[in-house]
Image (spheres, helix red, strand yellow):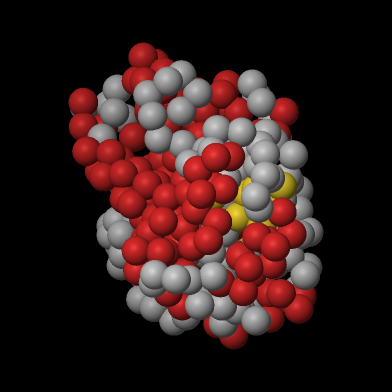
Length: 278
């Protein structure tokens, strides 16, 4: 969990292995046309098309690419004290979610190429150590990423730990698709939990400033309070101190009152322009 932006790290040769033509980025503006789907008014983020939009939005901030499916094989130590960061939402060897992922993969496919690293992942959990991992592990991760079972395991853990809890809480708070995405993006970066720097702490801070729609509050007012609270937490850590994913992405949609997160969407992250047209 909890990764920083990682600019320019995906080599073209790596990306081509998993880029579906319908999601290929194009041109200076990184514009992408997702697989054709009818956008329904008022649907939540669990809608397949809306969920794909959410994944592209997160990937623009995490990977400087809209092609989130190219990230299954990504792995590196980005120097944030969390060991290796890898996969579609930045599973980390130092925070436990990478261990959970490899365990889930092994439950689905015993004897897989990563199973032998489970003892090492248990030992390095809570640290930035590479002990028992190293180059062999990163190479085997890239190999595993070609396995659709490992891709499914990443999807499963993303949903179990981050996406599903974020959407469930957002719906309980009376938030539409944009608010659900805002919660999900925060959950990916800051992780679940109730301490002040985690998702629950950010939500608690926001609720001291504004009522949720479920409490009778105004949706825009609450979401602005939530984004304000998140920025305070982001600025505490150098790796997250660039808040453009809030300022020039999420706040753009909020200011436009696009609560259903309907395309066309245009935004910037770290100064780079992106768009989703349909």
